[in-house]
Image (cartoon, rainbow over all chains, first blue to last red):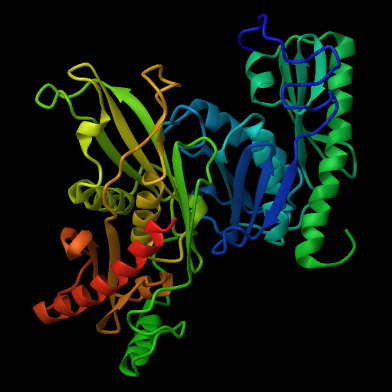
Length: 241
Length: 259
């Protein structure tokens, strides 16, 4: 984590710079079908994050050498739009985006029922339109919504949240200042129905007790986000949420 | 995934429609799709716009950077326009380096804005010979259902006219609105079934021939032209679309100027 310093990010009453308490999530809004030409799509506003995910497929996998006889291949791309950050984000090859694309694909492959679509390809495109903090979590969550919107069978949704530590206090769902100047960041991808994990990263410094606290925050937050996701899906497709 | 296999059938279908003076989605020859333009939609950009034309959706975001001026123009800032057709925006858009099409789009949008003189590059000077602003217009496709050229151009000028030079963040004075003096507007036409139509959708693009892009400024001054794709057209055909462009550009200018 970057510059741990004298920056006061939690006041004596436990209120964070954006007015939240330690365990609070930022406001979340979900919209499905935001890319009309795609087979499925979703956008998530999560704090000031705005991320759009679109799904194309299942379609023929080409070139042929990428085909798998027994299952579909998942082609996942995470990218930041040039205007998504305070300083312009230069388009082109980027190691960070490549890594996030890979771990996002690894997470989604664990839930998408790929064996139903042998020799085909499913494309998942994640674009960060406005970045605050936790874009990889928002991207992964939005991607699972877009897959659901495309009608692709999954064993569970993926809900991703990051908790961390600022000024020695463990807090849920880090914002930009907390992410930049905080002491730890623990993003997790959680399957809300089974409670299992498909995505896990961490950097910084957490004691065993702090780690457990951050872990528990993520688990609880994922259940809350899942409710919002179910509402958005029920709103478009009807039925019990 | 390359060109759809149905192109010959589609071409025949579009030809039949054209023979009856109809279009596949029920529009008339010079009619555009439903349009909305929204400004100030991107929190991290210094100026921004979202344009929706039917199922075509784009953003334009304005960013500023400091740069050293060119020695032969010590008191002038710079302007750069890029257009990105990421694979998010359609199944036919491939990942990888910018496609020739997206480069063409960026350059055609850039020419219309640059040549209209809507930005006086001397307004971008901070310290002559040392420090000037570079304006970067990033056009970004969300959903490509055809005519990205017009969507990008419209989003670009709308975003530009509502952008702020971030002097405070770069420690070079106060924030101030970017002066934009004119409203260049692009109108694009595609030959479909042997005749030109305005604002072709994706189906018309796939089953159509050449396209022509016209950017007009105040008093119908022409600032940029581009002919793209294979095909021939006559002087009278061009005169006809120029007349249509004058009418539509004036309508769109009113929309942009009222934002």
